[in-house]
Image (tube, rainbow, N blue to C red; front, side):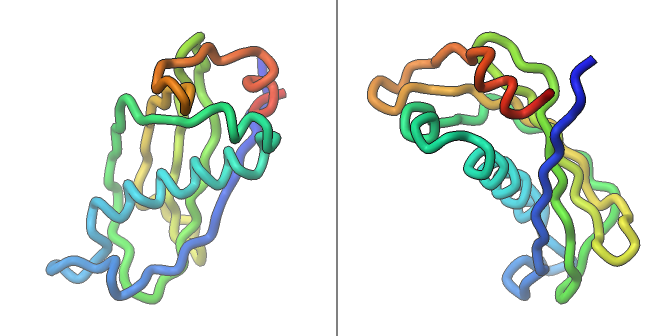
Length: 133
């Protein structure tokens, strides 16, 4: 079985992230999911692949478990799940930094596309191996 290569980013909850209920707005969690995915790609993928492959979201699923509030620090931890020919499943967990309490869990399906044509590209083995061992 492949070993999972996890990646994480730290995020400070800003006043602009807070909604009328006094906690982080749902759409902000989704932005953090995307931010973690982009950072993971930019960290591991060679520059040449970053130039020839763009990613679009086909599907987001997110479960909200607990609120985050202004001033807290959270961690978005992400890893690749199942990789198919034309898609990557990416999992993300968002946790509060100080106690590692799970705040949200997301599953996103990403499709690689050719930036010149906008058409899907095959996910080759070399790219898959960058994100798993």
